[in-house]
Image 1: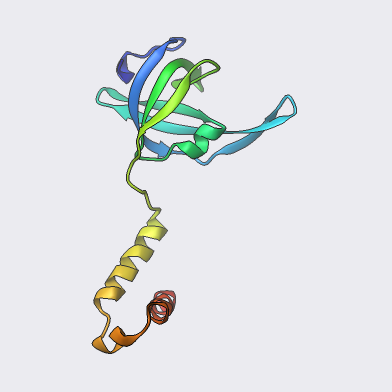
Image 2: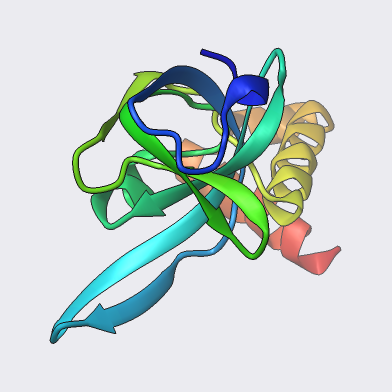
Length: 142
């Protein structure tokens, strides 16, 4: 199956897709029980669409992962088709994506790498802990 071929109210969807984005999870309460839901964007070679992640799926799936939706269902939310595992389907992570950093984390990682390159020879004798403390102070001073 391909994303481009999926239609609203279609069941028995069996597809492997890549997760390209993931919104912040939302908590809800229904029938006196709490749960989590999150919308992700998925793609394959034919296109992209939204995927609903429920409860444990929210923490299981990350951007960059390839997931296999088995016995999924296409519903409609706010006028857009949206894939879900529904009551009878399941989701398996078939390939973990590379670790994804936020922009702030990327900058911090790049700063640490740059400082490491600039380390003077005199600092070579510092213990790892002492050096890490100095690097951290320099990053915070920027």
